[in-house]
Amino acid sequence: MRERLEYVAAWALLKILGALPRRVARWSAAGLALFLFQLRPAWRRVALFNLRLAFPEWPEARCRLVVRKMVRNLGWMAAEFARFPKYTRENIAQTIVLEEFENFAAAERRGKGVLFLTGHMGAWELMPFAHALYDEPLYFLVRTIDNARVNALVEQYRGISGNRPIQKNQSARPVLRILSQGGTIGILADQNTAIEEAVFADFFGVPAATSSGIARLARRTGAAVVPAYGYWDASAGKYRLHYEREIELEATDDEQSDIQRYTARFNQIIENYVRRFPDQWLWVHRRWRNRPPGEKPIYPDETPHERPDERPDEMADETPDETAGGTPDEMPDGMKRRGSKKGEAR
Image 1 (spheres, rainbow, N blue to C red):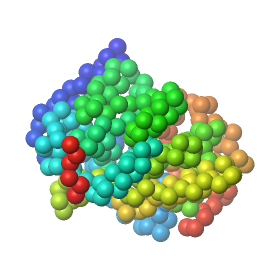
Image 2: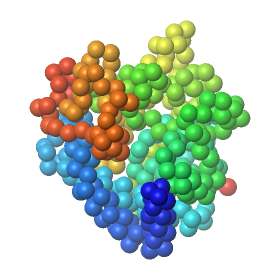
Image 3: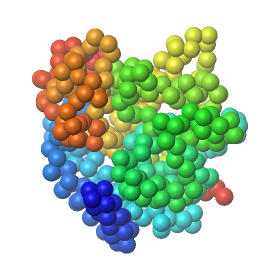
């Protein structure tokens, strides 16, 4: 029964937002996002904790302003997602335009496939959707939503422009095949990763468990790694999807050293984006949760003996990833910062 009710609520929300004028839909969704955010104070605590960790020099008022704008942007993205059935190659430029698309085109011409290095930036659901309308459909790695009905609904909307999802736990063979055929795969690379799949690389001066997948794929296949991110341009009243130049990755005889070096570089690129657009990144995710062996937890509600799969369910459900709270004074002593028909590209 719960799954059915969740599906009906998600379906109704998408249909209502999709039927409203875009401006009305965006502000209605932003208001709803703020309302839901207020109901879950743990979400605010984890966002503020992360901001204090990343920007210790910021006054409290600035951190809180960034959180409010982040919530607004999440609402705006929901409204854009609901409007996917209305977007076409002919009208997508009214909502989002491309910047330096030639960087992607040059990487694609190499013929070894392209890995989009991206994250939860701006309206991240809109970015691959728009890319497919301007250019060609791509593939992207996803985690299945627990509610199968809601998952099917979300995948239906994501696939309207022709994009195809790849389940993360079944990704190895499909990814290698797609890259060998010169295809494009988008990977969100900005979240905490299980220890057995991660390497630790600095993110805002603090070691963060980061997926080694992109680095390993690039080294093994020779696929081009192209950073791509979207952001809201208030002056233009639309989003911009920006493609950076392919990252030059030199391989040596030391595979593990290469993976570590590539991953550190990827984290720095994502950090540069977040510093430029701090209110357009997903601060409610506990990015620094998993720690290097022997290091104390960063988040004050964790103990040194906790593992992600051992946390009580009531705690695990507190935020989209887990809970966090506290102030900078509550950070453990063991945590030290390391240094406090292709559309026209526009």
